[in-house]
Image (cartoon, rainbow over all chains, first blue to last red; front, side, top):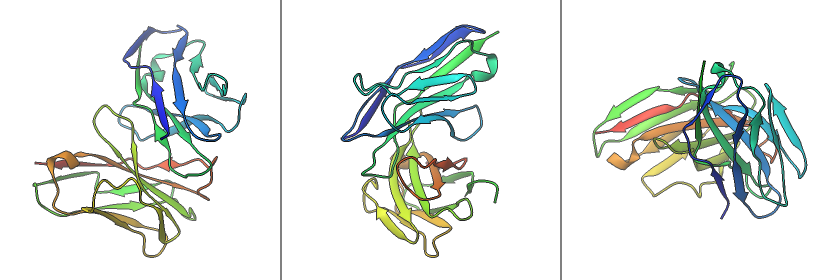
Length: 112
Length: 115
C-alpha cells in the first residue's frame, strides 16, 4: 500500500540555520505530494504541494521538489526563524484515491 | 463559514459509552474527510464523503465506527462502545471537488479521551 516515511525528530536548529527534512514515499501511479504544518495549538495547514515529477512547491521560504527517480519530496528552507517551530507532515495523495497518506511528522524546534 | 469547524473541541467519556463528533465543512465543499491522529503520529484516513454518500470507508477500523452526512454538508462521526484505544484527535477536512490536487482544509480537531 501507499506509505510515507519522514525523518524522526525533534530537529533542533539555531535561528538562520539551513533546514532539511527528508521525506520518501511508496505509491502506485503518480501521486500528488504535500507538506502540511501544525503550529502549536493550531490545526493542520497546507504549506506547499507538487502534483507531478520535477515540480517545485514553495511557500514562506520553504521549498520541496518532486523527485520521481528517488521517490522523494524533501523540505528545505535556507534560513529558519523561531516562528517556524512546528510539526511538519509529508503526505501523498494518489489519483486513484482521495485520501491523504501522512508520514509520522517531524517536530522542528528553532532556538534564538 | 471561514473554515472547517468541529465540535466539541474536547470530549471525555467512559469506556463502553457512545459518542458523536460533528464536523461543519467549508460552505460549498462537496468532499469531506475524517482522519484520526494518535499521539505523536500522523493523521490516518478513516472515511471520505462525496456529497451525501460515503465514497470510501476503507479506513474505518471496525464496525463500532460509523459516519453520516445526510444533507451533503455537516457530518457526524459516531463511535459505539468506546474503548481506551479510541483515544485520539479526530480531524475533519473538506475540499472543493475531492480530486487529486485539491487542497484539503482541516478543522482544529476533537480530542477524544476514553477513560
